[in-house]
Length: 368
Image 1: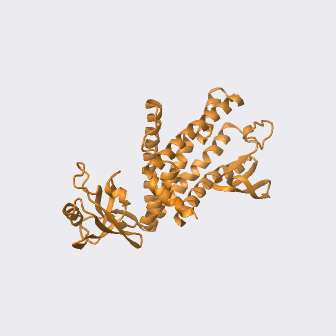
Image 2: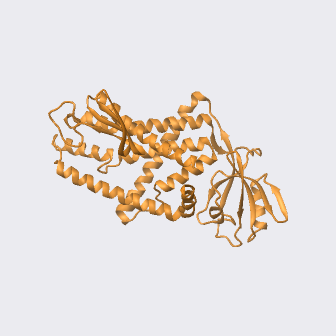
Image 3: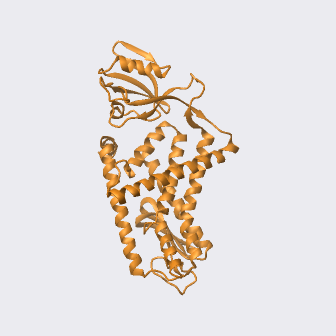
């Protein structure tokens, strides 16, 4: 349950970092901020300071910044958002994305300083044999084996072995195909016994359990070099995220469907949960990935997102400074909300199909 709340807090903080970018950019641009809210929904508490209402609301999933002249155009007041020149409005809109990119870089840098798990080089026999891949619908996945699990021991009714190499695991699985065995798995600082039955006739190239193995070690970099490694990780993650969203949108608009691999909040939670159990460095990388994803999602030219508002600015510039009619903007915004809502519903449905048993186990924690 603690990990559940930590992930919620993490995502809320990353969203607040995004909104803080809009807030400070607006203040620097001379735009009046009416409210900076932590959370959504019913107002719980509020305090007004320097003309800004700082609010705490019922649902603590992020927050929002409400600027004067943002929802209703007010063009005759220099403190209004809508009265600002295009460059200032662009600066305010892009500031949230910028803050998420900076946060991602800091998180990746912290991960590099703590130590990045990597494949052991040069035949390092001291590194533990770890699971680095789990095939969907395999005995390993059904038994709950996860990326990063360290295999310590293997047990059958007539034999127990300590695992010293990948070959130990491969030979043991081949010897006990079709029989239930026990794997002693290291996760974080704890050991877990997991029962699993290797397949007698596995699909080609999957093996009896459906796992990939390697020796993992922790590679640390000097503190002064961590920001450089963080920047490299930020670059790789940004490129991969753009490619992922590009493939997603291409599938939606060319094939009229969302890909089966699409994950929503439930899938993100379980991914973060698994990485938290593996170690802090993995979890920091997960946080960095989420921050980069928030930045790029908001860059998409979909009305209601920052990128959609930037698109409106570009259209205004092309039209010689003439903005779209308010009614037209509202229609586009409603279409954007409907589109994103449909994607979110499909992603959540997909998550429930893939993680149904784990989701039910998690919900049972909250039942009397």
